[in-house]
Length: 215
Image (cartoon, rainbow, N blue to C red; front, top):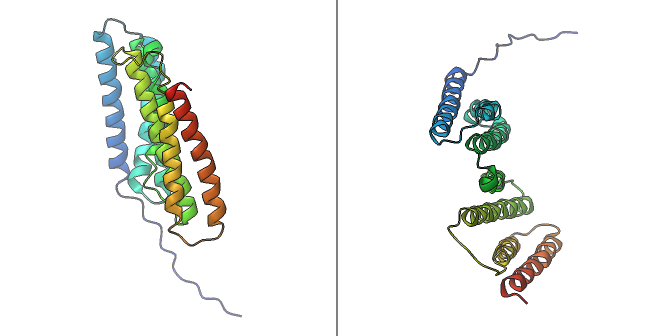
């Protein structure tokens, strides 16, 4: 019995790791410093919010090197960065003392994080269509949060109208559009998938129209 033995080359370290860490930490420090400085000059500074703001910046910085490496680590890095951004945004609102007026940001940031995965498309057409629908619905959620923010700041006033019905209608159009797109692909369970998408899309559109028109 014989066995061949070969030299196992050591795995080379990632050369850009240190640079990416330094850049991520520098950006995190700059964001935290700028936010703190602006909050101090606003006249309503809450120093204790730094215990939320700074960890959020550091969490986001931890995702930067993973994003830069790409491959399978990029998605993990993106998730870490988005979690850090959400914590950072919470700390910023607390530091400025505007959580009662800025709470729609807590809707916009997670929705934008989900919408940002739009270009990470699965290979299978059905999975790709469902993911695209979720990402676009998240974008619609971010627009809803932005509308809430405009209402909170007094820039817009829809009165007693059921304006949120327009976003329900938009959600229905998004889901219906992705159902129509699936008709281009030949795959198993295509008809069932399209039916499952069309049903909720029509219901959402009609409900939105009802709220918007006040029926």
